[in-house]
Image 1: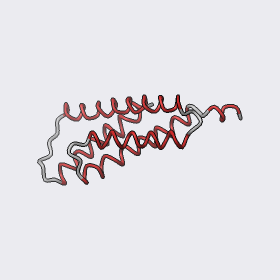
Image 2: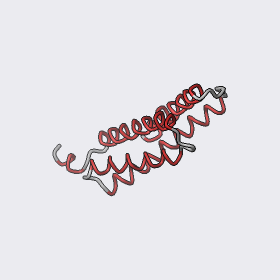
Image 3: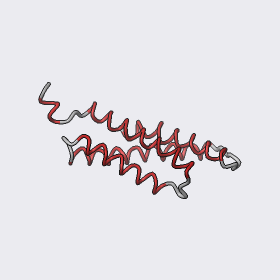
Image 4: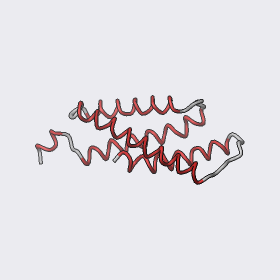
Length: 123
């Protein structure tokens, strides 16, 4: 689930954000298939890592949905800020929404796929 969300949101979305940053900062935009594939691959890897983090949180906080989602969001934001080097207002404003979109969709997809134990009993 993490890879399926990370590839388009973090990978492709990240590549688009990088392109916007290069245009906005008057840096000559470059494009290579290898570079783009690396960014997209890293988005998938980041998505897998996010999925693992979420799975651990879900294991230890099965009935604390709001706490789990908030903690996951905080972890994602901190990892994103750590990864943005140097962090500028432009890079934060482009990458943070991608991260939060990934986190929100991950939470939604997980809850749909694995309902909390209390919900399973009411079926």
